Length: 491
Image (cartoon, rainbow, N blue to C red):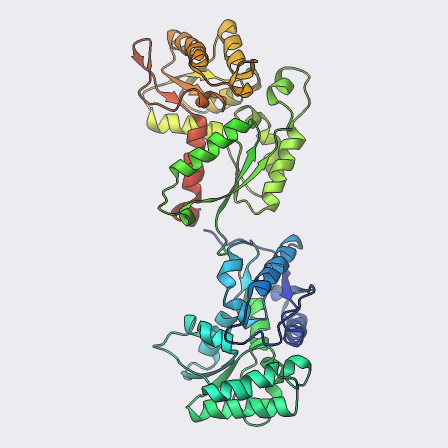
């Protein structure tokens, strides 16, 4: 996947509230870093904070993180809406579940532990024994071990008694840093923990709690070789390069046009996805709006224009972080060109994909018979796509077109929820008429029609083998292909 080009200045969000003192310290350092940045590195800093009641011992070994997870997700969604390019998350506890929240949002979180690791490798490449001052929770989750290769670094932690009596007490105690005590006993306790690490051979000490980063100067004054993790994190924002995030690929579906066809399309998406478990399937978001004005009524009559309704559905899918949009309605594609340039994500064109499929899978067949609504035929959207190929397109005569419309729209038609052999027999009459005109394959160009006949490359009509193509099936396969990791890396 190509790296997305974003104009400077970048907009960097800072999530507050997970530790007022630590996040305020990072925000202050980020603001200074931004002010000193060269013109080509400029960033705008946004701070966001909601009401969050932190646990008195949030860093305890068996602390509950559910409320924290939901808070982080809500804040990331807020920064998404504020169009931030990236977010700083000054909380090591939250980085233990970073993958969980990143998978659900499009705004990238700049990785704090990765920034520290990279800074160490660059600034202190000869130091390999690293002391870590972090919470018991983060220590239990082995967060730092996920980033520091054991072949390159030896991670050292305070002894269990020191961890409890010094580190946790210095940060979370009644006279700890979280309660506003940035000197006195809290510094003494942290110094004792640092000396424990130094005796173990630590060459440098890394704060794994953002509050500890607020008192590094006091510890340095006592000769402790400790890094300022908040400063490192702030500086990393200047080097941020936008790229793909860990968020799962999501297909957006404009549904309700018609309702049964929407369900049919989703079923085909699922059927065509190579999956052995639930988690292997593709994320979907469906804007199911059967109130969108009828497309055919507008194209061949004086019915309401559905452009705005289709566009609104697409914009809602766009705002819900869909990566592409599928519209399982042939006639609606007459309106796609009107709205595509106003969207930031592509609509996969079902009609062009159908013609492409014919060229790839049925190269020896050049006469396409189209069964579609009168609106689709009148709009010329299939004619335009076929005109770009070597094929020709034929449509039913007036009598058989009226039959097709009745199969779709009649009181006993598919849109009325009727699916039976009588309807199949009537539609087959229209197919046979097209074959008699020279059709070598037939496209079911209305998404209700595949509810009567499935795609079949060996369909028999009048003693001839005439492939029967379902654009809904072709669209589903294309969407699955685009959602595959190999396809995304190639785009």
